[in-house]
Image (tube, rainbow, N blue to C red):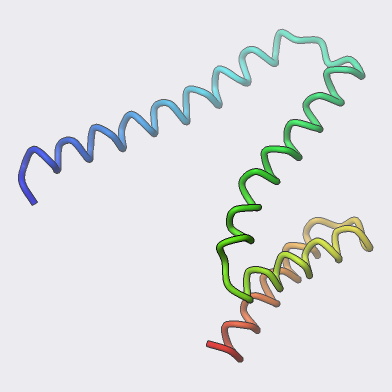
Length: 103
């Protein structure tokens, strides 16, 4: 690996970190000046769900059986029990079990 490609990689990583951190900080700063009425609260709740779905869907589509089993188990537990911690734990257990049995 040449010296220039190392510096290009480090520059790209640094830019991604700055952009990610900056978007978090700027988002918090902007939202600290917005009054949280019922409409804004519904928007934020809907936005967080849509972002979560956009991140998880490609993982499920391109994943193996363990990923799909974990997603189904976690989703089912989340709907039935409405407890995110138990849902996450069940998804992890199902994925680990799949990896242990199937490989």
